[in-house]
Length: 67
Image (cartoon, rainbow, N blue to C red; front, side):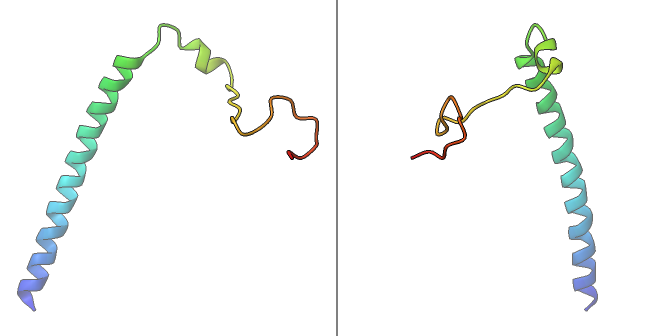
């Protein structure tokens, strides 16, 4: 019984440490990607929402269901 408790504690500690390392690596990667793809003007995305229409929907919706 004691070996199982010790093993589970070790696995929990190792899992927590690896999770924190994974998050740090992910944050570093995300920061690099953000710097790499950052546009010259961020006011475009900050000014308002961008409406993206689906290709399946008609360009003009007059209230009639699609046939």
